[in-house]
Length: 417
Image (cartoon, rainbow, N blue to C red):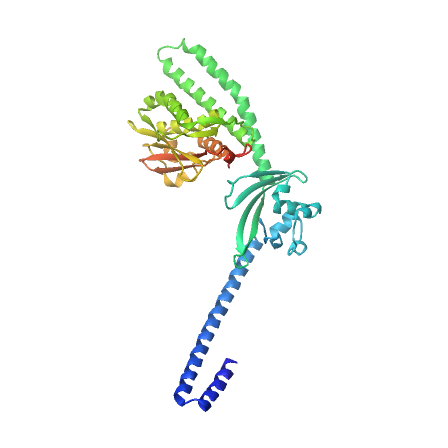
């Protein structure tokens, strides 16, 4: 069509205009034609690439083991993969392009899907992510049928960015959590059964201590330390079971964090002298660090991190506990820095996992690998986060945040895996 127009326009130009203008007009038309052809070619190429990418993404989503659903701002379902069909026992033809509402939960076949789309309808909901954080992670617990789902929700723009749609990735954790609870129950029963014998061993050793002399003293001391270590491990195991059952128990009250830290450092001085390190507290003297916290549980966090900082330090090393307000955020940042052996980079990402110990500190002393797992969960229950930075043979710094605003503290006991 463009070629016909060029020929017609050229004929008219040569008939009505001088040759110079006719040739110029023809050249302009040809250049325009080439430009239009090039743009159309690029557009066709881009369109084909988008189609290929769309088919690739669709293929990935279709065969993902996790259920994936997507819907627009009006809650019209746009995506429903094969795993979603199995999870919700629905065919995609039944639900795609269907607009969902709260009333959709009244339909027995659509009830579970509606409760996932509108999580406030679920019998039990536990938020695992911080308020306003993307993506939002939520655990939904159902009784009939018994089911536990983890839902990861994300918002994305569509329709030229004027509206927003939503996608949800749903993982069925029913069997996994049942096995996890069985393991946790076993650990709980075993640790509680071991607690009394361990206490009786320590009591017996205390009674025998005054009667030991000579070469037997070193044997007795070793036995006493081993019994204390066993008691500590049992106590940690019991704490972990309580955390994971949501029964650790917290009593929040207003706390002056600066005075609290000073008291803890004073209590840590005998341990510091034992390991030959110096401990310091740094914070702006004019700042008031008022927070809401559980005095005993937060003390567990500070004591654990301070003990590690002193235990894995060098002779004449330092431990510095610092407090500062997070700029433009309702949080206090606490840091505990040491000049010790450090943590290998490859071990940092696993540091807060249960039973994990960095290989270099495992060679220095025995430990259960439970302390930092407890620290992470106590900080999470207070509405904060913990992380670590380290340089091998130069030292480690643990950072954790605590909210100043009471409303940022989670509503109930939950644990961070």
